[in-house]
Length: 387
Image (cartoon, rainbow, N blue to C red; front, side, top):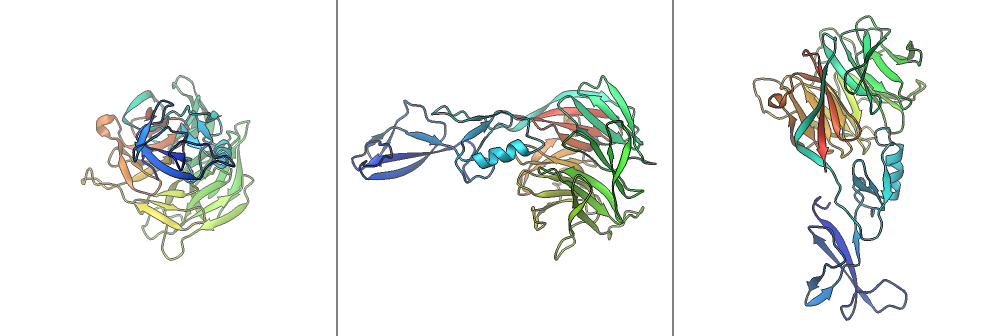
């Protein structure tokens, strides 16, 4: 895979060293591939073994599959896509509103975003929840926040308009996700149900289970992933957890338990990456566990020891459009970022940057994350991707 600062360029030369188009009847050709540190312009020329060569075409590789030549460019991520990945990009809930344009001629711009060196705080407001457990994006202008309260708060992006939805729980929702039609889905550990909020604001039971449902996620294909465990108020480490997949109508599709190892104990939070990986934040095991789309183990992440005085406690997780996994670490007051293969990238936000007990977290689908702090009652938005 090419470094993000390099571009792959191919030349077709005839036996005399002149640049030729690949047409029938042309002289025998030689194909030469070069890596350069910037895009070609029409006036660029290079000398290869004393031959003057002008670039014919700058060939970009799709940044999602990393194998096929790119034909399109997403202006929101931004990034380069092949035809097949463009279709998938349009289908995903998190990227379906993105603007995608074909790559034309020699006009190739380096638009791929990267993690911001110093994420900027874009919003901060207070709720009346005693403890905040999670935050989710309904749209570009609205979020929902939930905590140790039967209410779900629907808030605009400036925090100026807050309305409440009363859930059918005695304590509070445990997990939450947003369906493709913007309906709110939540889990209730006590009654072992998954419920959906109707247009009238009432809750209807979608799934009743024998295990306690916790983390929820809506996949790229529109199905529902649920993290479940045997309910135990003592949160014993020897609990056994699993992941199940359901259709939006509540029919069970499959379950993931792990083959030769105990994958889960208490899967509190769950998300899906662009490559189909299912990623779980486990409360009891204090780690992040990823499996591929078929349920085979991929990697685990146990945190970094920035502050050895506190244990790594991963809470809410999400992924961005570049495939990074973003993790809220409550005890160490920080936001971790790992890549799609589980390798540590860096601490994106720390207590010095204004984060205190992050519990809820979600990516907005463009360039920012929302963070709900556990006890401060504050919800904050940070821009984490830049061009």
